[in-house]
Length: 154
Ligand SMILES: CC(C)(COP(=O)(O)OP(=O)(O)OC[C@H]1O[C@@H](n2cnc3c(N)ncnc32)[C@H](O)[C@@H]1OP(=O)(O)O)[C@@H](O)C(=O)NCCC(=O)NCCS
Image 1 (cartoon, rainbow, N blue to C red):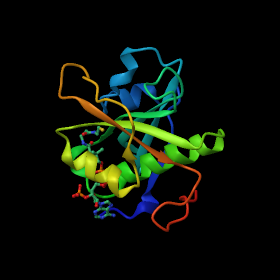
Image 2 (cartoon, helix red, strand yellow):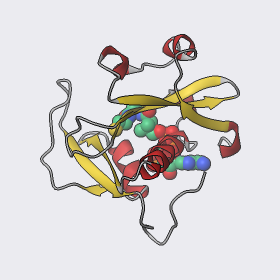
Image 3 (spheres, helix red, strand yellow):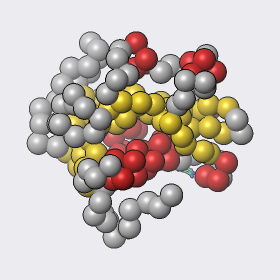
Image 4 (tube, rainbow, N blue to C red):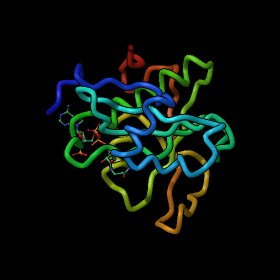
């Protein structure tokens, strides 16, 4: 298990892009980045995961967490959780009360992660994504405490 203190999450900068692009998939780079940006998880100076935060043009009309990816050798240590919590804080800081995301109906590990983090099914039909299995939308209130826990602090 990785101690959470060694993982730093920050917004991808132009200067860091070549380094990160050489290591991580960054699938959203092929589209327009105008409506969002990547959060990158760093461990000891190396990029080990990412999540794309789309602010506009989303299915539910809410900020949406997309393209969450953690390098296989770093999974299960809280990096996906840290990326999600960072996105929640950014969204709440911009005055939104909810963050949305979608998860493949045949991706039980990711679905379990988001259920644990308090995401609930959104009232919205699943959608085909890039020719793979349908993805179902979920959302979470990022301003009100859930499951008796306060919102994550920085
Ligand atoms: C889904 C994905 C992003 C999760 O990332 P992750 O860094 O492994 O997520 P976390 O570590 O925060 O949580 C996942 C698991 O680790 C466990 N965990 C979290 N923190 C932990 C810690 N400190 N110590 C031990 N285990 C921990 C969780 O309970 C969870 O358990 P489980 O998956 O074995 O049931 C990652 O598996 C991945 O990149 N998958 C491929 C791409 C993908 O499917 N993306 C999702 C699209 S919606």
